[in-house]
Structure formats: C-alpha cells, structure tokens
Image 1 (spheres, each protein chain N blue to C red):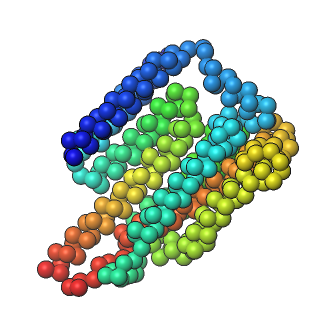
Image 2 (spheres, rainbow over the protein chains, first blue to last red):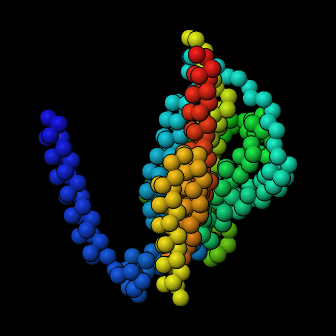
Image 3 (cartoon, helix red, strand yellow):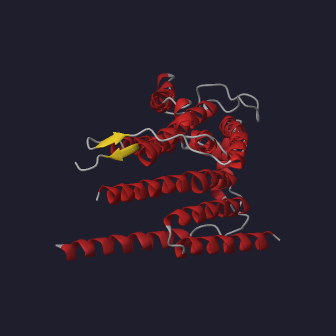
Length: 245
Length: 86
C-alpha cells in the first residue's frame, strides 16, 4: 500500500515536472522585447484609466482570483484563532510592565506614526503606484506593533480592541463579495468593473471599482494581521500552562 | 549596468539564504531571514517588480520573522516552566 502511494506520488510529480519544463521552454526569453501578455494587460488597464497595471490585474482582470486569495487569508487566520485560543489547562497571567531601553522606546515611538501613515498611503494609492491593499495592510498592521517594542504589552492591548479588528476583518471580506454581487445586480457579471465611471486617469478616484476593492483588501489584510499577531502574542506573553495538572 | 546590479543582488540573496540555513539558532535564523527578505525585495525591484518587492518587504522582513520570534519565545517559556515544576 505504502509503495503504491509512493509510486502514485512519483508519477504525479514527474508529470507536473514535465509540464512545468514544457511551459518554461515556451516562455518569452528573459529581458526580451516581446511581451504578449504584458502588452494586453497594460492595454486593458489603460482602457479603464488605472495607472498601476498590477492593480488592474489584481482587482479588475483577475478580481475573482483575489477573492480566492482573501478567502485563503481569512480561513488561515480563522484556523490560527481556533488553534491558539486559551485551552482548558491554560490560564492568563498578565505580564509585568517591561523595562524598555530609552533609545528603543524613542525610536519605536518616533517610527510608529511614520510607518502607520506609510501603510495607509500605500493602501490609498494602490491603483496609482506600486503597492496596494495587501502590502499597505501588512505595513499598517505591523506598524501598530511597534508599540509593543516601545512601551509594553499592556499599552498595545489598550489601543487594540481585538473584537473591533475581528469584526472589520469579516466586514471587509463581505464588502468585497457585495461589490462583486453589485456587478451581477447591475446586469453584467460577478466582479465586473462596469459599475462606476472610470474617472480621470492617475487620480485617487480613477478606475471604477478598483479603489473600492483595493480598500476592502487593505482593511481585510490589516485586520487579519492584527488578529493573527494578537493571538501569537497572547500565547507568547500571557497564556501559561497550569502546573501539576 | 543593469546586468551587474542583477548579478550583485542575486549573489546577495544566495549569500543570505545560505547564512539562514547555516545558522542553527532559530531566533538568530529569524533575524537572518528578515535580512534575506530585504535583499529579496531589492532583487524584485531590480527585476522591475516593485509590487512583489513591497509584498516581500512587508511579509518577508517584518511579519514572518516576528511570528518565528514569538513561537521561539513561547517554546522557550514552556520549557522553563516545565523545568521549574519539576
């Protein structure tokens, strides 16, 4: 039985490898001037007044793909929350206020607002410049945790009501779905970018539904990362196993 | 010119990745991993993929090392309390 399984794995792996090699041999050469896919993607992006072609691919041409990605992130964070919750043989011990070296404190508190604003800027300008909801969301969420470095865990917990972030995580996923369904109700297709006017090229409101989908993804990723890190921090700092049980 | 930059960043990535594997202490590995994340972000930007570079910078050099450090801390603390209970 075990041998059969190994054989099946070997056959599948060999088939996948052969297909990948065949696909790679047909790719345009590295650094060449012929970009069949790129040219079409850029054309489609310019047609809809989106300055950042990557954002156009993510939130317009392949918006359905992005829906899959945010669902994966949502499910992964949900799984972590379930796995890392406080179990029956564990209890919470609030950590002692920590002594923070002065340069660390000064640097962390100085960088925190800058990093937070950078994250929000990257989210807001997703359809104009490199970046977008995912990148900006991670930056904004990790920026918040500089408070843990600069002050201590208690301070972080005070500015981070976890319930709010859990709710906004789900709300953002719902918002993405609702924006997709709005396309169906308007008579075109799920997640089709035909709902809103395309606006002036290279402004914050250009690109139809792209800025809205981008904002939804930014909100989802930022809240998901905060919730994920909160549960990891809880396990690392607060939750302890019961002794002698 | 751009070929030279690509070669240098590729070599840096290879060096950092090797350092991350050679290093055996998980906490230090996380630090090397965050340097690797930053170098990979440079490589992606040089290869004209600033979008992927930003993702790599945010996830690879901040989020992943942070999660690894927290796991290391949890595992070490658990070992300490176990020893204390004995």
